[in-house]
Length: 69
Length: 167
Figure (spheres, rainbow over the protein chains, first blue to last red):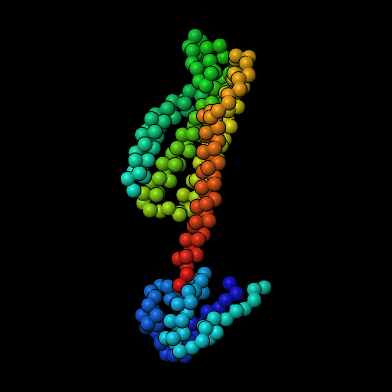
């Protein structure tokens, strides 16, 4: 997929653990892992909003579009 | 969920009754070509075995083959219902079984229709036009319905997978 998720980079920058973020935004660690690994097919605006709020960042800090070959 | 258990019970009964005949048919088909049945009169789908020729034997074999295909499709449908009871509704096995059942029913319906028409022409020298719902037409429609169900379940599985991967 052309959308890359840089959630792990943001977690390192904010010195936060995945489990902690999952608890803050109210999703399961398993679902957060799906998002981090790039296996997710879609992300809800509410989840994105919660992540941005918890990590104090913009959606563009987490998501990046790279054109496919 | 009571309805599905009722369906399962009916299918189990139908399968039990059908399964008794399967080994008999499998033994009977080779015997038909080897052994001379003489005065024994056997009527399967308007094909009389008492005055049978080699072509008659072929027709009987095809009719029995269509019955075996129907039996296998019944077996597959029984398995599908079993998967439904275990709440494995959008499983790959269910989709494959729906497609297989549909194909088997279509082949069985066509086979029984062709043998029925040919046997009437060959043994009774008459062409009979049946207007209305015949068993062959019902089997054909059922087969097509199962194929459509298979396609619908493929789309549903895709939607379910996408929904599960939405965070």
